[in-house]
Image (cartoon, rainbow, N blue to C red):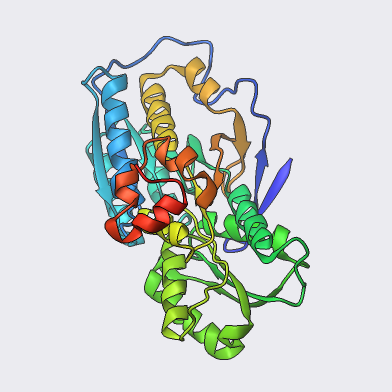
Length: 369
C-alpha cells in the first residue's frame, strides 16, 4: 500500500498498486450484458487551455475513440472551464440537464466540484475523474502515476547534478497549482528523492499553473538566492519550465542550470534538443485518452465485467474510499530517447520538432530526417 499526501486537502490518497484481478466497479459484475447501445453521449469537461495538450490531444483522441467504439453513433460533448472553477460547475450542470450518459471530468478545483458530482450521481449519470482526482461520489478515476512523475523528475535532476551531488547545492522548486491534487502528488514524489540530497532554497506553489506566475516567482528566487547559486530548478511542468528559463535569461544567465519539466510539449522538446531544458516527463496522452474513452463507453453501456478489467487499482479520495482506478505509466524524456518516445508514438514528427533554426541541434541528436 502506497500513501500519497495531499497537503492542500490535509488528507491522503491511498493507492493499491495491485495491477491484477478484477473489481466490482459499477454495480454487480454478474450482469455483463450492455444496458445501452451505441447511441450514447459522453460529456467531457477539461480544466484549462494554458496547457496545449488538452486541446491538441485529450479532446480529439477521446472524441475519435468514442466514435470508433460506438461505430460512429456515439458523441462527445466538450467544454473547457478555462481555469474557472465556477464556470466548470455550471458546465457540469449543463451536461446533467442535457442528460448525457456519462461524464469525464478533469476538475479545476477538486473540492469545489464535489457538489456537482453529487448532483450528477443523483441524476443517475456516472462520473469518471479524468487525469485529476475529483471529490464526491465518482465512479472511477484514470490518471498517470503522479507520485512517480515527481520521483522521475527528482531522480533526473539529481542525475544532471552528477553522481554524488553536494547536499548544500541550492535548487528552486516551482510546483504546480495548490488547487490541483496532482500537483501535490508531483511535489511529494519529488521531495522523496530530493530531500537530504540537495538544499531546497525556495519552493513555490504556482497559482493556477500560470506561466506568468512562475516567471514572477523565479525572478523573486533569483534576487533572493543569486543566479550563480541556483544549481538546478525543479519545474513541475513544461509551461513552468519555459517561464523559469525566461526569468533566468532576463537575469543574464546564459549557462542554464538543469531544469525539469512535464508533458513533453513541443517547445519543451525543442528546448531539450538545444540543451536549455534538461528533461520532461513523457505522459502518453493518447493512451490515457483512449483508455478513458473506453472506460466511459463501457460504463455508459453497462458492460461491468469489461469495466472491472479496465480498473485494476484502487484509490481513496477525501470523500470516497476504494475508487476503481487505472494508472498509466510515465517515461523520463531526455535528448537521448526523443526518437523512441514522442516520435515513435506519433505525438510529433521530426519535421514538427526540427525547424530550420534547430537543424544542427537535431542532426547532433540524431533526429535529422
